[in-house]
Image (tube, rainbow over the protein chains, first blue to last red):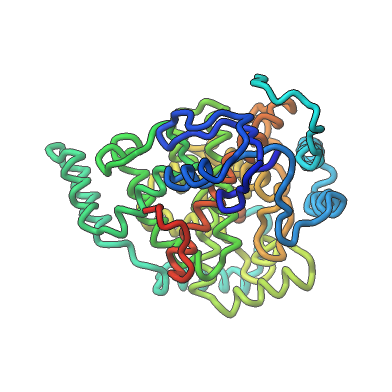
Length: 113
Length: 302
Ligand SMILES: [Fe+2]
Ligand SMILES: [Fe+2]
């Protein structure tokens, strides 16, 4: 799952979350495959970001997961003696790792949760 | 305050304090603030009339509405008019938004990293405030937005010292906070606190700014100070530092006890923060493009 700007959206990407209008109505439900006309419509409706399945857009200058985890380690370098912060560090690293995991294509794309 | 300073240092500190107190180079508060302050003391003035005064300044009005609709306040509905912004956010927040709009004008082009750190901190504050169900989440978010105000003041008033601080941070791998103490004998939290006080900001903003690195010092708003303190930690943990000062600051145990967060709460908080940070990235980018003028995108946006 990845949140991308509307400029990065391309045909065929699958929505991982509902797209809401600015006044909080569902504009397009999750699991929808994006088409050129849907993307156009989002732009017209002032939608700036969408969340899509997998991790389709490589960010410019993006680090490898290993480097990202090391960078977190470094940032927390001077607070290793503080327990709650070590827990915070672990959670941040866990989430980074989870975000990089791509969903297997066979997985259920229905309306879970 | 803990260790006594030598007389020379104490003198130097007083001189710096004096220089900063004048804040010659900082933006003076827009005249509109004093007008609004007078209005708010007048019981006969309606929010409508206040809205009218603000809307005379088109740029200001547009910025206000943009901030009001941004992720750090997280109102479920779109705020489309100034009068509803005043009702929803309250006068103190409106006042501070006007101030932050003028401060951020400086920050945006001078220090994009500090600007993103500040926006991010505001987001974390709003998530924490909602999670803890405190009564005035908007004010805490606003405090997060301007918690490092003192850094801007130091940069504007003492540009040479500020450069030395940046160099120290780079060469010794220390935090700006530590470098400020070594060089100036004081830090940006203290400076930000003076400034906020001199602008007559409410204590709910002054204390979290002044004590965000030492929340135990906050006497009337310990919770707000603890939230900004921890928000600063989280946003730094997520990689929104300030230049080569990438460090996660220490957590004060007293503040941690006050927040009463369980380890399991952290996941939920991080999830909410990540989601909202995206909106902020968009917001920050939009502002940059508006400022830059060139290459403004999506003609549909207005
Ligand atoms: Fe700070
Ligand atoms: Fe900070």
